[in-house]
Image (tube, rainbow, N blue to C red; front, side, top):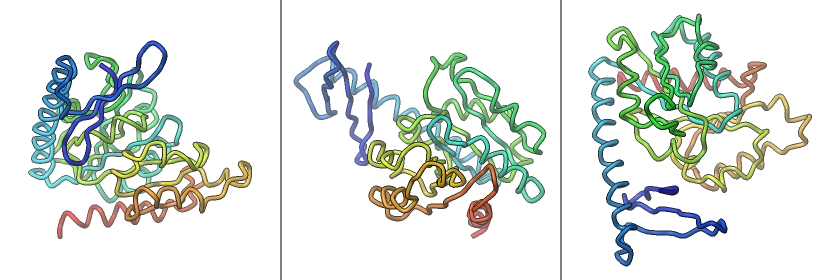
Length: 259
């Protein structure tokens, strides 16, 4: 079917590649190709069903007094390490549930075990076609593995990918992402939909800056180019540097539920 993207106005745009790797574009208002129109109809139906399920999820969270956070990143950014440190810090204050999204393994879920959180593993390769993201129906299924009335916070650790996860509302109250200095400062420009969608960016692995000869200010500036309002927090989940600012952001996020 090719890649697809939903614009802010709700229209769907598909990207197909021929055998030579050339990209072809089809927009939702293009009526010249019957197969293209059928494809758009299918995609719009997928998004519409997703949004209905997202509302179900959001109502489930809110009826149980839960705040939900969608945590996204590329593979290898240190997202699971950030999450592990977060559980260690907040487990005494909040009852936390984690929906762990992965394509095929339970390795990340195992790393989070024993940290005081309820964990519901969701392998997208099991009946979901190996999807590169979590959508609202998947999250709805994963909620059955959590005791919602007992929880204050649900963190959805999305599949590592900088393209698809940003497209799908899963019923969260905020979106966050982990962005590592090892990924290069060009990623906000290459993947603007993801960076534009999030409320907070954790610029991780700043402990490696002296060894990589990188300029942190250039990372911050690139994020600001596509998202002028997001909170940007330079951190090292490994050493703990800057993590207090992240924990403070989460505490304010939790306090907002009472406002």
